[in-house]
Length: 188
Image (cartoon, rainbow, N blue to C red; front, side, top):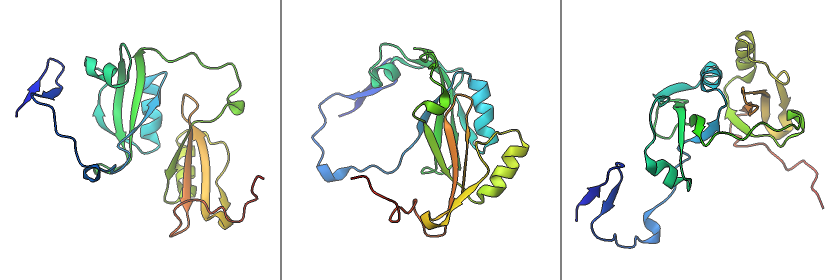
C-alpha cells in the first residue's frame, strides 16, 4: 500500500490502516505551545530578549487549508515563528502567532490585574541574575525576585509579555520538581 499525496501536501493511504494496538503509542512531550500576539514584531523582540531563539521563521508563509481543517476552523492564516529554548527534539518550543484570519478578539475592558492570568512558567537557573540582566535591557517585572524556601522555591519573579501573558521565571532548589505544598492550608 502506498500513500497518496493530495494538493495540500497531506497524505492518505489507498487502503484503510489497521487498528493499532493501544500500547503502540505514547505522548513524548509537549512539542510547542502557542502564544497569540497582537503585534508579531513586538512580541518576537520580547521573547528573543528573554532567551528564546528563532528556530523557524514563518511570518510570510501562506498556510495550507489543512491547518484550518486540523483546528476545526473555516479559515486559518497568520504570521508566526517557532521559537525554542535549545534545539533538541524535546526542548521547550513556543509557536508565536499574530492571527490574520480569524483575528484576535478585542482586548477586554476589565483591568489586566483583575483578569484570570495566562501564565508561562520558565524553569530558570539563577533567577536573580536573569532579573538583573533583563531589567537592564528594559523588561519590566511585577516584583523583584521572591523566595519561598519552605516551598522549595529559591527565587521567582514575573513580567508580562506585550499582550499581557505573565512570564514567570522560577528557580527551584536542587531535586525539587515543583512547588512543595504540604505546609499549605486546605479548603474544606
